[in-house]
Amino acid sequence: MTRFAGRAALALLSCCVSLFAQGAPGIDKAKIEAYVRHLMLWTPQITVTVADPAPAPMPGYQEVKVTGAYQQASLDEIFYVSLDGKTMIRGSVFDIDKSPFTKELAKLKTDLQPSLGTPGAKVVVVAFSDFQCGYCKEEAKTLRTNLLQTFPNDVRLYFKDFPIEQIHPWAMSASIAGRCVFRQKPAAFWEYHDWIFEKQSEVTPENVKAKVGEWVQSKGLDTLQFSRCYDTRATEAEIRRNLTEGRQLRVNSTPTLFVNGRMVPGSVPWQQLKAIIDWELDYAKKHPESGEKCCEVTLPIPGKN
Image 1 (tube, rainbow, N blue to C red):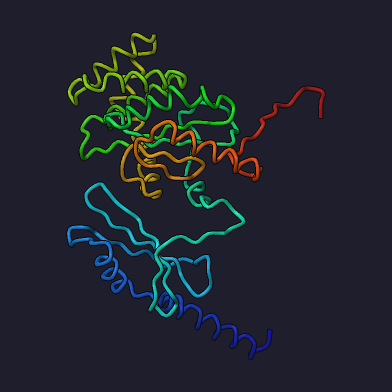
Image 2 (image 1 turned 180 degrees about the vertical axis):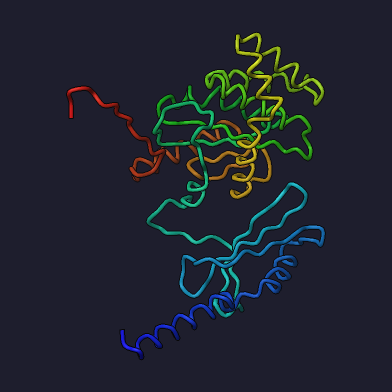
């Protein structure tokens, strides 16, 4: 490298470092925060965080996530800010060659979650639910009574704990207990799921462990293993991850379902939910790449390459 070329390279590097240090052009976090506070009616007791800009899916803009948080609740809003900082777009950007729910599907993590139905099904239903929620109880009964009976081969159901601790004082404890059951015997989780919803009116913050312990014993599960798991809150981190995931997906009430990534909030009558699933099945016929991606696990056979 010549001396001139070396100096030019150093000058270019210096320029790039200087631009990086100054941040992206046109992003005034204080101004964005003030504007979003006014837009969203986020009062001073709400903490607002404006994230660093990220590349936007369209030219001339940068993606900026703004988070409003109060106590244990939070909400993310996505804005697209022009490079000169004068224009903001609030909304979603779609690639018409892909599912409109591609972003939601990417955020939904279903591995190691309680599930029922056919692996690799064309329609995946993910339920964010709270064991102390009355509407969740009704939605759970609807799903358990109708879903797999109507769609025995085409649908897979996943359960995601989303205890709303601010208004449901024993919901987190019930979720921790359910995850302890799931760890010990995955198939028993759905028995627990049905039982805890059925006993909802009898459970209190004071008796939840005793009642679940009696149920665990009646099912022939290891009560010592369950108690150790429950007392150490060994499964709480899993539930916290589900809560974080739900907030990223804009879940703010229970029950909330996602049908192939499509958000369906509230307790939905079966005929309405069935119509949505039928719609997704029809879409899947025209788009073979949709649905749950499933892999075949093959074990090596001696003597066979």
